[in-house]
Image (cartoon, rainbow, N blue to C red; front, side, top):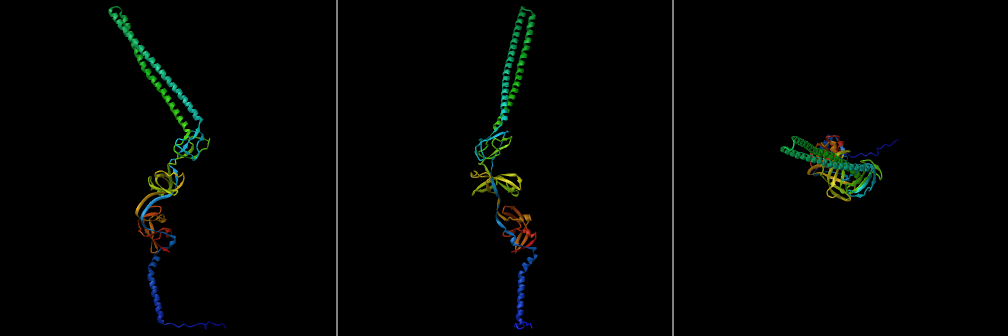
Length: 423
């Protein structure tokens, strides 16, 4: 026979029915109070489209203060003056310096041997000497011909005067009856012939002078043209001696000793270390606001130097623009080519500007709205943004100082108007 548990059961005494009713009523009143207290929050929870954990969000406070817009990045030291020297003519190279050697302006750096150019110069010089001899000979011949023409003119003048004297004597004799009239006519004819000869001699002197001038001018011009060819070849021969255009140091050698190069081939580069600049890459969005003359700051080697934007490349490469800063005053002596430095360019600085930390919400919303935290919820609000810096963005409309804004992670809201933010 199986025993039951009746022996273990014990009846409890029942309390008064009035006390139990009072406890039930108190519990009901407490539940109603709790429901009234939680009703607004419950209403907000029910009105929200979704709920997102606060750990997934980045939140920043809207502040009123200074907004400094700048561009910062890494830069490298480059030479503002770094000419590359080329071969003026084809030939064999003899290097007189090595990479890194300090050089002075007009110092001989390399020589090019060009036998063809040297031989051509000698030939053209010989041609110039021959043309000079022709010109001098033509000048001597011209003087001789002019003298001959002048002599003929003088002889004709004397003959004309003699004919005039003879005519005078014959006329006097005829009047005295000492000679016939025919002699007077013959003397008059002789005067006419002498006069014609005199005019021809005078005209010949002028024509000879003009002809000789043109001939001498042609000879002189030919000689001068030849001299110009000689000077051009002399310049080319002088360019075979490669000299430094600046004070500095040899940067890079593009050829080897005794190698044969073509005309206009790269030989070497010279770096002017007294005119250094710092080149940095700037994002295309900020490059639009850069302009020459903007102040900057250059840091490196535990030091800081003031700089000024000197130039901005007009070409965009990989969504970046190259900008150069020059040092204010004397460039530091300890810097070297391609050395890395930190660069900062000040674009703008404003006081008493309403701003918020920059975040991905700008790209996510296109800067048209933001989510503001209120009572555990993120509320979508229309805004208008202004100038941007690397860390902050100006708020023109839609936000107030002290408000907290979701600056990152709002993509999880999926454009909802109201989102619960759980802690």
